[in-house]
Image 1 (cartoon, rainbow, N blue to C red):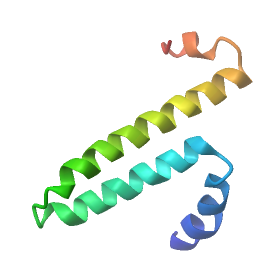
Image 2 (image 1 turned 180 degrees about the vertical axis):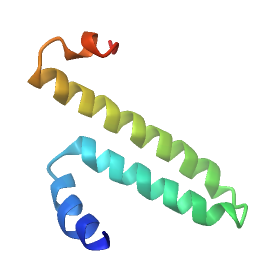
Image 3 (image 1 turned 60 degrees about the vertical axis):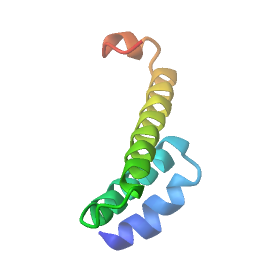
Length: 79
């Protein structure tokens, strides 16, 4: 699995902004989990960064999908 993330997802993410934001969100979630046991103030910053990257990734992915299938955003209840 580590090789897939490093070799495949890592390379594809550079040309797909939505995927890059999801990778960054997962990275923030992982770091937040590690630091949560230490109760460092950085956890709040990581939580904010994680949410920001998830939001951007989802928005970009939704835009990409709506470009592939016109009207998709209304079909899935997104506007």
